Length: 252
Ligand code: CIR
Image (tube, rainbow, N blue to C red; front, side, top):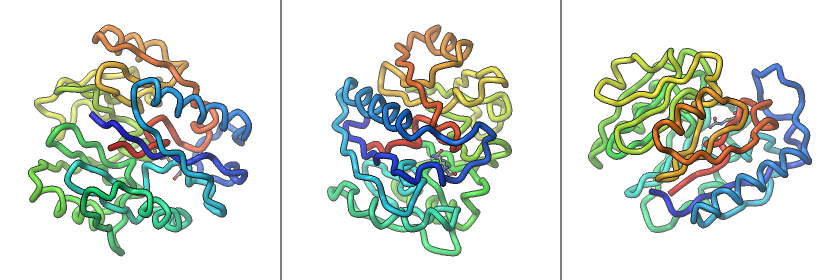
C-alpha cells in the first residue's frame, strides 16, 4: 500500500485544460474545494500528501498522475501523449521520491500514467490516444526485469486505461463491461460496473477503504457488497476535463 502521495493544486487556467467531455467549463472555486477535499481524504487514510503549487501555463498539470509511473523499485518520468502536457514532467520529476532510480520515456514513445495500472506484480498498460506502442514497450522493458508481468490492453473508449479500470486489492479489479472480458484480465476477479456508470470505474483503493466518485449508486453498491468502505468524493469539475480521482495524485 502506498503511504505517500504527490498532488498539484489546480491553477487559474484550469478552464483551458484538454477535454472531450461536453460538460461545460469547470468552476475554479469549486474545483479547488474538491481538490482540498481529495487531499483531506487521502490524509484521513493516513497518507502523507505533498501538495505542489499550480504550474503556470499548464492547465492540465493538476492531473499529476500522467507525468510519472512509480513502483517501489523505480520511478519513470513519462512523455505525455498530448504535446501541450509535456512541459509538466520536469517539475514532477523534481518532486519524485529520491529513494529509487529514475528513468524516462523517450520520444517517439509516449505514455501517460493514467494508462498504467499496477496491482501486485502485474502491470497493465493501455494503448490509447495518449500511450503508443513505443512508450508502452519502453515501460515493459523497464518493469519486466524487475519481475512485473506486463500486459498490453487496447483502450477502446475513455481517455485512459484507468478511466475504465481500477484495482480493489488482492486479485479483484473494477472494470467497465467493455474491458471486463478481455484476455488481459483472465484469472482476475473482475467486478463489472454498469455501462452507464463507466466513470465510476476510476476509483482509488486505499487498502480497505476506497475513494470513489459520488453520483454512481449502482457501482458504489457493488463496492460495498465487496465489503469495501466507500468514501465518496465529488469530482464534477475534474470530470469536465476528462479527469477523475486517480488522475489527481501520484502514489508511492
Ligand atoms: C487531459 O486530457 O490530459 C486532462 N484534461 C485529463 C487527464 C486525466 N488524467 C488521468 O486520467 N490520469
